[in-house]
Image 1 (tube, helix red, strand yellow):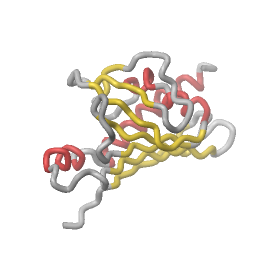
Image 2 (cartoon, helix red, strand yellow):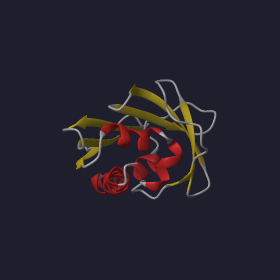
Image 3 (cartoon, rainbow, N blue to C red):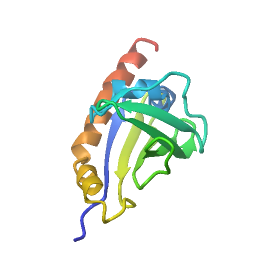
Length: 155
């Protein structure tokens, strides 16, 4: 079975990269644009600053995930691996890449990679496979609406 375990979507957003990045790197903002409608809330004061940071999110199910930042370039790239509280990540990777396209436009690429999930964990494999391009595009659309509104209002 050779199924795709990395999905991605991209979108041009009519807002500067720094504004968009702030919405992604501040976990308290993430439920505002989450296209999976999986994120309920995050405490403030968790703004990601560098690789090695860990931020916690409360899911709509009430569970908590600790997200381990593994890639970070301010205003360009951020990626994290979720884990159960107090545990190591098990194989998911969420990545955001931002490429400025002029002063007030940014190409944003969003990807979800679950290729490192244990193959014998059928429950997690099924749940991961349910996240596709449509869900990523949903997050991008909501992020675009929010960022473009903020950009139009002068932030």
